[in-house]
Length: 442
Image (tube, rainbow, N blue to C red; front, side, top):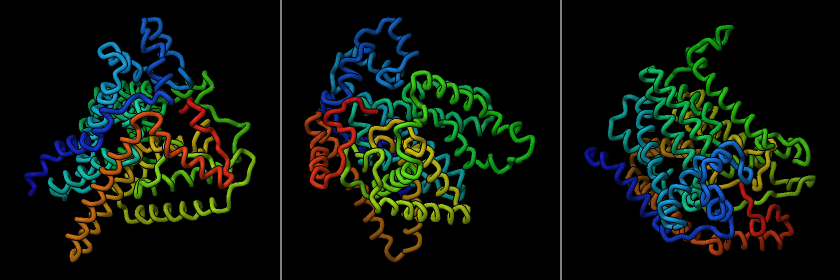
């Protein structure tokens, strides 16, 4: 049986293609961001050296993604505005991300539990990578051309993490320099990449590099933190550059009060957890529940209770020193940290499927670990549990396949939100930042 595990990467590639086959026949989202971001983007069709210099030093429609635009330019130069080519190109990037994740997870799981057999390691890594590849929450990112910057920033980030693992294992400075360069490319693909230094600390934790830290006057002289200084300086530079264009700044006026933002953050975290487990009723736009200045519905306090339960659960595994569960939760939280609304930054929607592109890895790590524990605990029902797991993964793939079809064009994509708007009108709930009118999404 273990001989078949070597085919897991091939299975990942084939399965991902089968799930996202409809994207090859989808159009641009002409009624949404694809128009201004791709089709009418002056830097794509008129790419002089001066234009490109301007694009690398300015924000365009409130976003900074010049590296992503370079990919658009290459595709346009070779094939024109051919939707199939654009969709295919970024599906290929997604598949590469899946494979990088698989090999990164192999190293991590081997490090956490060196007693695992090679087949077990490959199967565990393959299951997490498969969830990342085909989960319905990934459809928005993979099937929407304007979300390609998320796929691309993750592409550079995964390579950076792979280089960082090589640095940890070899201590050769060339690997660390490579990580710095990839960090710049990742940020040039999407600003969300600014969070990379925190991800590197999570990998330091999994490799046991933080256990030797001494919290005294020599703290910043210790190698594991000293080597992070260039990364945090770059992060500060990226933030300062963004602030020059009034982006990435904290809003102090005309925003929700702090207690509501904290509840929004808890709501978002809990919603992401539940959507990862049971991805039903997914939309491309999730409305804020209230206007600024209104009172939150009472049931929002329930998210406080659910957050306490989740934190208590993680704390219990911290006390048990379960590094894999803690590693997964850290990846989940860190990579949605900037979109939890606790810091009042401009966001047109309270949650978004595309924000989970990287974060879903953390929840998948935890989920697969629990499934593995269930198989080992309930030996009598091992076959039934295994069949249920296969059925669950199959259901994820089928839903993603049909959800990709819903992204065929702007008309089909917006149908479910039109449904949601009608329901909110009946319930007299506010329609904030109506996406059927507002095309300037973030």
